[in-house]
Image (cartoon, rainbow, N blue to C red; front, side, top):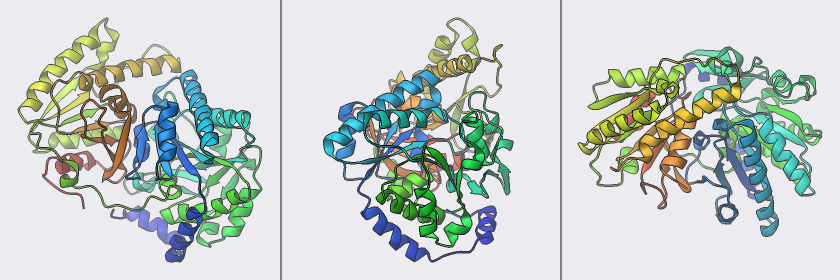
Length: 482
């Protein structure tokens, strides 16, 4: 991936270090860790840094046992909790934690839990990690000493500097609380300083001044023992914020983390996708090409489903519409949720149009109406339920297809999760890699609606204005990853 000018400027602010030593030391540390890395992913975009890793879409004991038996040290369980209510999220995490404990005790294999969520700080926090902590501590002799807050995600332009989390927009770095993501009706917040964010989200239970901060100066100074000592001093589930502007910072931290774990400390992560790759020992891989993605002789057209409404998604959709690619655009009017039976009628209308187009070998983009509508309520749960109803309708477009598309791109976390689990009925997928930085591709399993289908999971908040167009061009054989 080409470095943006802003990223280059960031890297120049802090001294570089012996990267070869870091790589060799990290490899030795991970070789001696011998723990299963269990990632609970609140939407499907969390695999946006890994490849050749399994994603399970259920958490039955049998699935968790299969995951623990894999050679890979890391696996993902898709909870889709960002699309669930708080009570549903609590129930799901209780179930998963109890079953992971059972399998761990049965196999004798210890584990590390990562609650992977949004790099722009949205999601059911602190609920998810609190539930995990309580179940683990009540069901075993483990005590969770601390929670590691690690939202760095280089591919998406998310950096933590001097304890403040930033989101890159063009050549600017915006404090996270100044972005549209912080205004999310369900998961909003007002603090960019991650210590203050922890205090805000926990309603003062964990104070900003009590948070342990891992500084860039110490990471770049390779102060492994000093960082490990900081971790050893954490107790009572207190919070640890890790600063990072590059993957090398993650790697140095993980080296220190392993030292602390080997001395008996136990942690849970609340993180974005970067640390999963490093802690899971997943090597780098080039971006996927057309020939790697399109493996069948299917001549039907592909389909792009755009559900996300963040500004970046709308700009990417507009760039796709302005292109000269031979494709059809179909607007899905989700405002009909306010009519009795309106969404059902809209789904039938869109499916008829989609099948006609893809049968003729044409690419189709289905997008939800860009204009928002406001419900006459401040009830966050009610707002979330309406969003779920709309997402279910969008999902039904794929679920009821009688013609196999050549590929599917789903834009937006909740949209892509529902299409993967409810429409395509995937139970276990293999992550092929990324089509563009931070944009993962599943290969659907044999049990799915369309086995062996490349399914592109495109986060709503990742990429530049042209990234969606670039992904479509690759899948259509009009361009290749660079």
